[in-house]
Length: 183
Image (spheres, rainbow, N blue to C red):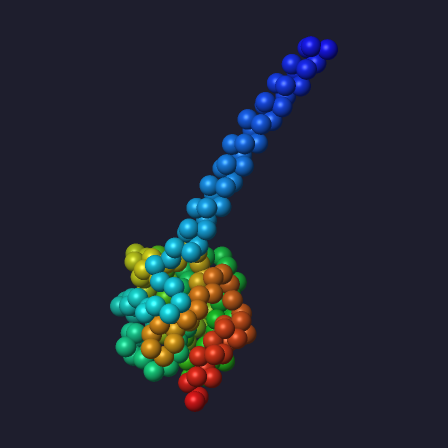
């Protein structure tokens, strides 16, 4: 019986040695994830960082040129699978905005020639800027692609939509800004 107790004690100790570090690792990973998700450089209500200066599809757009109307700044890349699947919805969004807000695409950390092929393949007809080295996206606090930022008429970030979106979801998120513009 003494051997049985010792064997049970060893098994419990082995389980504790595996469980305790595992739980600790999960807690650390959760904390890091929470910091990453909440620790972006720019959050709602803050002025948006400047847009890239490289024009992949005209016209050239700056934050100053957007002043007075809501804007949708959509970060994407040609190498991004979800961006490719989402592309028809972004084309539909450009049409559905109907001039009530400006849609600006920002190609992030991508080869400009691949980006141009992507733009033509998906029939995008809105202004698109290139952020080839990723600097502007990093200033916005990107943690993945695609990511869509909503700006008010004063150039402040009022919303952040991570992941693939539908035209309807973006319009719904932008509804408050669109109704403010009418009044």
